[in-house]
Length: 207
Image 1: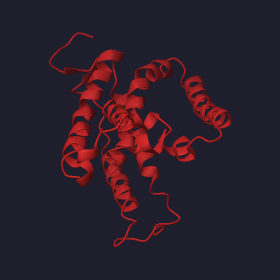
Image 2: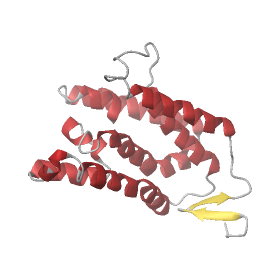
Image 3: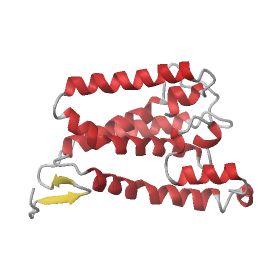
């Protein structure tokens, strides 16, 4: 679509300034999801003991953010270009990710002088900087340097697959949803059988 005064082009997806969908209730939902994440990570002394918020699974807030992000991107998407979209998404999250590693974990932490002094640590650093560390079923990798950044790595995977999934959804919603479900469940079942000793925490959560 040609650019005009009422249209903004961002990363190969055309967003209309006048028709971008804004749902205030979702903004409010973000607050509760963020609060749930804070409370989840507050279950340590001297704050709250473990299991303080049972039977609520507050960890589901991260999944909620993933779903919400995909929903917002989908309802505002007009036209998708894979390369430009992925570049823009990468530019949105990668600088902050690198800044967190550099300033929080390479400068201020006491062990910073040991960072990347072995081949394994250097590998972990490279995977972390590339935002693919949560794709590796090893805790030393997906929790390396900045452990909460596993969610950013997972988000990068979702961004990488989003244009293709959106293209399929526009053709057949039901078939795409069923196919995505079959692939997700099948992957976990198959990998669990092929690699019985695989990190179950990664298999059921971090990937």
